[in-house]
Length: 275
Image (cartoon, rainbow, N blue to C red; front, side):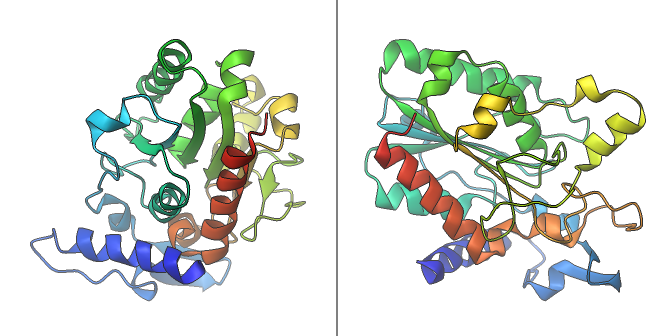
């Protein structure tokens, strides 16, 4: 399974890279510029701007299905499935029939305005409640997309939440310590005091009310896995690291344990009918 996930990701990298007029090799080492320590490595933001692809045709993705995999990409990623989720989403669809992939349509711009994307997800789920009874959902959010999904979860009512079976967050800038849903790169409970970069800023400005968080019930539900890699200064803010784009923040699609444990979580919850 792990080799399949890795090959899927390398395949999309190869396809995307070929779209550039000036060929570029995006191997793991070329993404990373060492700065001072292993804990602080800078990555190339150009990686995120590679052309993206859809897995399911847009028209089919909007139709009723057994389940929908809705993913929200990070800042500056072009429209399409986030490269952080592409391998796991493709493999979920290959292992459970009847599902579709639906990327969130929103700007994903540097202004960090997620309202359009929030409304997109809410409309899809609310329409599904009326037109596609029993349709299940798994939500995925990377970076700004994680912020978007946190806000969506806070706006869904109990009936809608019951159909959201799994939530996968990676590189969450509003990560807060002490959550049961916080996990490390192996999908294991993360007991660290990691604080997201936006959470840190909000707390410094006494604006804790502005921090989108999982409710206690959702955090305890087992639905959510909130991954933060070592060296990702977006979900684990490090004031001593000068990187604008930490290398760890770009690595979720390349880490086998993240891809595998997230895949297993989504599959088990969609198949198992968990509440």
